[in-house]
Image (tube, rainbow, N blue to C red; front, side, top):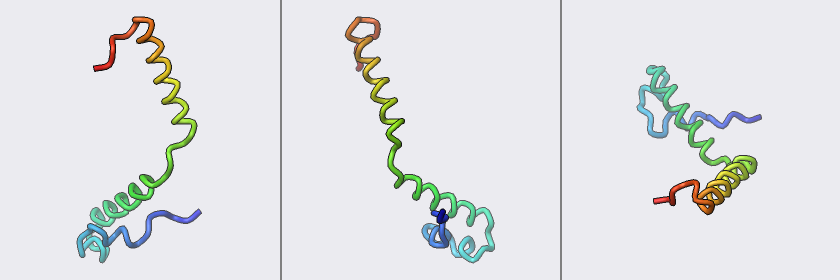
Amino acid sequence: MEDPVDERGATEGGTAKAASGLDPNGLIGSKLKALYRAIEQEPVPDLFIDLLQKLDDAEACMQANGKLPPKV
């Protein structure tokens, strides 16, 4: 599997120190930001979407039966 964090993450939004490797905290921060950007692009798993739909359905059913107050 290819590593989604590449060297571009060290210079995008990072300082020259972090890019050159002189500031380890800056380099770690840049790598984490690059990893977060990669994860943001991943689709939501179908299992999670199904679970959210079931919760919405259960909530609607309980509201219809008068067991929950209406949404505000």
